[in-house]
Length: 510
Ligand code: KIV
Ligand code: ZN
Image 1 (cartoon, rainbow, N blue to C red):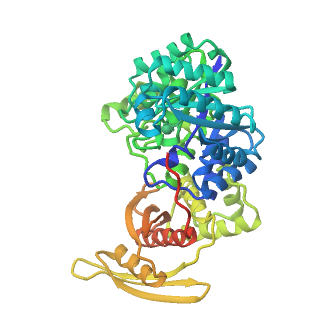
Image 2: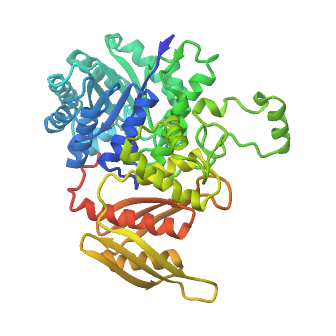
């Protein structure tokens, strides 16, 4: 069996998705879950791009054990130094350098000739080797690069010390057969390629990211760069869960290959990434979409009942989905609650248990049946990574077909309690405007989405908002059986983050 190395770039390329911006503690939480998923490499960020990214990569390098921790760098000394410094605390560390090799990028973006590119690439790799023996090189836009020049760059960076050669399809332009042939040609034409691992990094502009990655495996690639839920720049990256489950489900086709991924953690990881980035998963998304295992047509339902494999090629259990089990209710005690939380993977100390149990009891008063998903949402709710400036104490709304919606909101901060009233287009809008009045912010609602966590009229409604104020943006989240309350709390959560963000320096964009 040959192992396919899974290089997860959710925290780097994934975070480049429009609108996704993760706080350091959120990145750490995702990295922790990637460890449980058992990915081989975590690309934790692009350290030179902002002080926040540097700090996030460093804290992951300090605290996350198991996978190789990787930092991205352009082929520049200051980038390589920042990446080297940020990943320093990690036991296993990698620097990933990129430099474009396609004619269009060299001419218009870099304004450099071929010889200069080769020189810079060699210097960059040699310099990175001062920080770690594990250096990956990416000839950016490789799939649109002239092949002979690509072979030359690859050969030279391997001589300089690169141990992984990544072949990015940066703009998602490749077609599977052609991309597979490119990998095969690199194997045939680069004399020292045997000294490095071939990696692929496929974007999804034509919806072919996964297909291209799989074609590459068949032709010699042994590392796949991918993201949870396929998030990433523009149309995103190849999705981790689709690649992993394709290799697993079609092991008749990929017969000599396996990954080390604990597939039972896929669903949980997908949910966490969606929640923290604020990027919803489309219902028909393969593997992790809400409908991925739903059978609507009568004929299909009948078939599945007679024999599951008539219409299901994977079982939901394989990705960690079990039929929603009724777990707890109003009369459940602390012991049952703690046991259930342990089973769900939460290690709570005494004060954590106290707080979580309090929230559970409050929910049980409003909702008759409490499912695993409710408990997970409850835990996410309580996992604030920063101290909130404003807390919602109470609110009241009046709305109806013949009324102007109005909200009265009461918030508390260190300075005391404040109340405000506002009218709006609806009760949610009125609440947000009242919150703006108290907090003296003018939040612009860029995105608003609501999803029921489980079935039933009393289901928790989980609201995710993206709010902009001046040049800053933040994601806010909250859940409640009352969707107006969830909306007000999510909006306030985003406003608190905006206040907390202060005046961060602008990022360097790739
Ligand atoms: O898409 C791309 O080319 C990249 C590189 C930095 C590897 O993300
Ligand atoms: Zn990319």
